[in-house]
Image 1 (tube, helix red, strand yellow):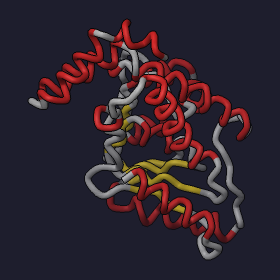
Image 2: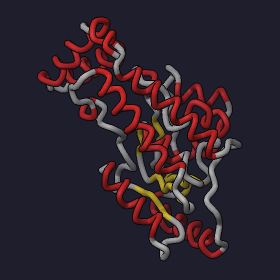
Image 3: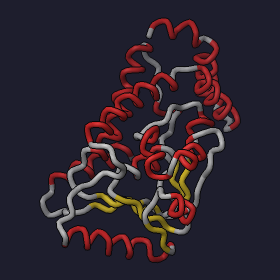
Image 4: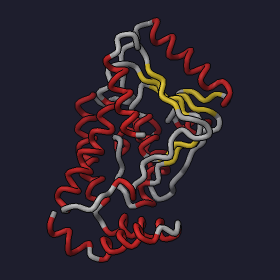
Length: 242
């Protein structure tokens, strides 16, 4: 799905007939986020870390460097990278059925998608920490509107209709691509690069590995669970290879 999204964004960027992009999901979800366990493949620790850094950095650079206005129309639950990438769009319109979850602290994962700086700019320090920290606040569409995470919240049935109106207005006015918050593209690119290293480090640290073991074990996926368990208990040994 991520590769398909990347391909479609590249096509939209180069197609002169496309002026604005609306990004939405198939009901009842917007996006469940990244399959963290499935994204890790056994290889030399240095190679694994460099791959995680590159993959994470590229994912969000697609949004940061996208040349045309892009509107996220969040139609349902959005989790993790689906939330942070949406804040890198020009704007977010949310359905009343939308929810926004960034469970990084619970999963033992570093903050990504420029959320370490951008969430506080959009919502203030307190609300940013409520979402990104141990509280794990999951605002609804209306709550996200009140906090400043999204710009519009509408009834579920009218979401795409309203999104189309906004996108049409942008196209008619030749609206340029804009980034939310006060930071420049170069500043956000730098933040993304730093966060990508931090994400890779957290993926290779014991709290995340053991968390994945418990999650997969509870899902009865014992083979992958035992792999993460082995990586977790031997973490201090193989991390010396980084």
